[in-house]
Length: 236
Image (cartoon, rainbow, N blue to C red):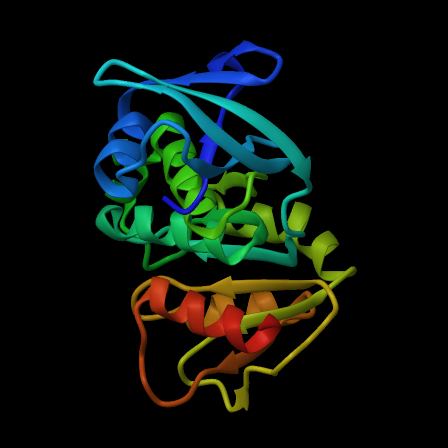
């Protein structure tokens, strides 16, 4: 937890917060902070700054805070990710958030198991928590937009085609001939397939609305690994 993320109900006055639970345990057990120490803090959706610990015991932590600088800008990146296995989903959401993606779309595809859509990890509370973890890791306060597209063809026709008209559109595909570009500056929509990749009909549908199929090379990577590698090539 590189940033202590604050929420509106943490405030006991305009410039003082009171924390319990997970954040208290982290400050006490990981930061090993004491009264008088300063911590990096940020208000969800707002500014970042410093918090000075004024009270700390096993029940609660209180800090006087000063939020005086904006969070880092988001990448102009929309990630369209075929819904991964439930045990991978949390890593994908937190990683995409840490990398600074502006939007995340969880997409259905032919190779996505129907049972994945019934996973409790798709609960709103869990998806929010995973994005919070990503913000805490990356020292950011602004959540990426997150939505689910359970129908592949209607989503391409009604929404993705419009996105494609305003951005560089890339579909990561292991057998693609073109390499992923380096160091772009323009907005990008990046589509990542499920395990085994998009099927040929899905790749054709994406290419028909302006996507270019690209590859990271001959190795087939896990979704969370490919996500980090692709974002790094594109923007870092």
